[in-house]
Length: 66
Ligand SMILES: [Zn+2]
Image 1 (spheres, helix red, strand yellow):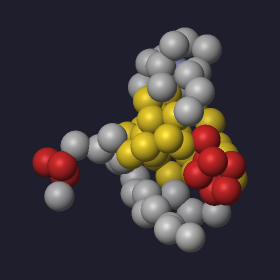
Image 2 (spheres, rainbow, N blue to C red):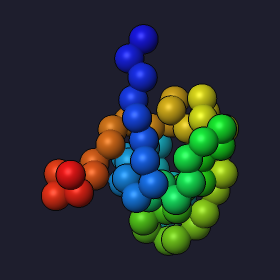
Image 3 (cartoon, rainbow, N blue to C red):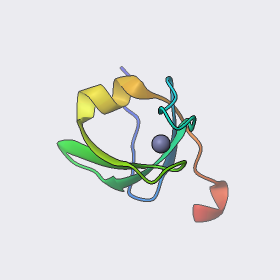
Image 4 (cartoon, helix red, strand yellow):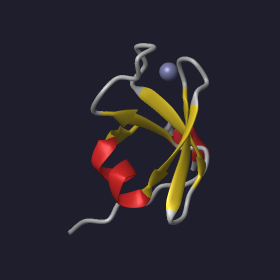
């Protein structure tokens, strides 16, 4: 299994949209639980890592970060 690495500040695209219509979330916390903030409405949620990884479709962080 390929294990993706996520870091604080990454923008991720979810498989399902938030009720506000946005697919993109910013990672604010990593670890056992991930804290993510909706880029559309600013809503913050905590998700267990496995749940988070299942919900993510892609990491869309710009390359300029590296
Ligand atoms: Zn939202």
